[in-house]
Length: 170
Length: 402
Image (cartoon, rainbow over the protein chains, first blue to last red):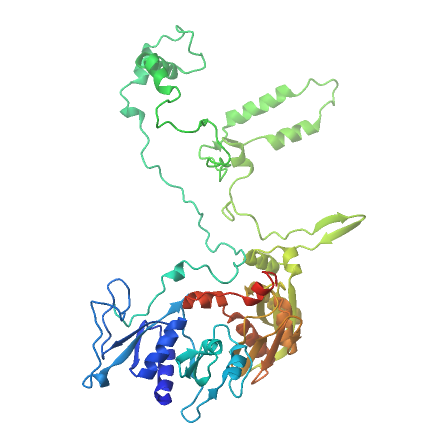
């Protein structure tokens, strides 16, 4: 769970969105994959596909690659190809503005922040909790690493679990 | 398709814009909307007709048949005669009667008349130019004079002559033959068929009870503003326009210091429209008018939550000035500095807090505040972009009434 790599990934995704790219890739780790799937669940990114150094072929009907495409099955990870695996992400745009506009770390590699349900509840209501600013912009999300996987802060409050704050997406 | 190409959202085309519709603007091109089209088929020339009308006219006995009215010319009567011979009356009756077949039209229209709603309107001719008009010859003028002389009543005594008669004749005498308008109101090369806008309008006088109210004509700048915005004078006077900054600025040239007045104004309709305008002129009043009119011209709609506050927190940055605007609950009021307060008043925002975090330059503060207000995002758009369903809990709680 390297936050250094995540910091690089955050900057990269922000840059790719500003450059209006349709597809981009990040290093393939279990942590990245879980976070990206959580973000896809929130609707920030359209697809998450594991591939090699070259982008996987696009789906026959859709304009982007999919993980469930029978024509382009996903290569299983082995110890020979693991270093070259990358996660290929489809970025989303709406009304010619990127859906994923801002991506920044909350926990830093030198200072990780854990929060319980009461703190998370405050954040979700828009109040500051500790040194973390509340979610006061419309549609802003904070992702939390919990023992039930990576969840959005609102889901954490719903399920009454706390955890480590990872990043803030807006 | 390259996978690295920027993706375009197909659904964006179907989404309605989140912003309210813009105010009516002037047309940005001078060409007419409907171009006059050429007919798709050339008209049939009479030469292609098999019937030789002139030949038939010669054969046609001039007044033998009493059925055809006499006011037709010989050619017309010949054509009628020929047509009567050719057309079988029984067949004609069958063809021109009301249709009974299943493909008949389901309505009955008199197509000989022009419907003012459906049909292309018949307009007055665009110009009153007459190609066939020419100057009267001397003989024709002489005839006019003789006609006039004959119309003068016989004098009862020696000095019985009405000079008004001659004046009337002199005034009404036409020097050309052809359409009357072509002579009376001819086209000029200076302004062909355009309204004369250079003419200064006269002050409009209206009586309000006993007193007479003299309305000054709009200045050229105001006329231009009205044309640009589509607002009339009364609507413009109803807008809230405030001058927030005014100071002297100096340009140092080799001839000396040239001083001018800089003015920044804010305009809004107190119902979601906001605009700022800058003006600079040697005269204070001129700069004021310039900035105010520019502010009105620059008015754009902003988003407001429940018509009282903003959607979430927004930030704006112009140069070293950075500020943050915070949405607040009902009844909070405007707790911010005077420049932002004035903008909120013009835009119709009632609950807001603001913090100017870095430089507090007044001009940049105003600009940054407007930028921040314009950078708001509609939650509905965000939800649509992410494919999520959105419910305003506040509205649901108060049963749709906020």
